[in-house]
Image (cartoon, rainbow, N blue to C red; front, side, top):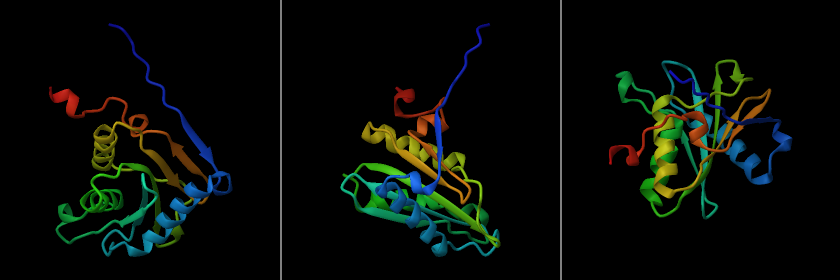
Length: 159
């Protein structure tokens, strides 16, 4: 049996080290946390994505008493963008979260379902999706969803 190693490269930075465009996206994700409907978990997540033409689309998690009916912030933003602007690739997404104590110090990472949707965005447009994971203590920058999900399943796997 042969051992395989997978390496990923992540960048860690502070908000003042981001480009103006990335900083704006993070700020929009933070603002989007206030649009969250999270009466059960009290865990508010906001996402902001940038389309290729520069437009920003936001999303926020939406909970429901029938728990499977809710939706994460990342997917609300992605699905809204794809429904309204299907010809526009998504170039970047920022994610922020807060609980009852305020914004989280450590960045949060997308769930598996959101990662799969983000992976399909990359596959659909044949370009990487830059991911900014915000925390008050630091920001993690990921150059591609493939770095979050290196053994991925996309359309080509079904052929």
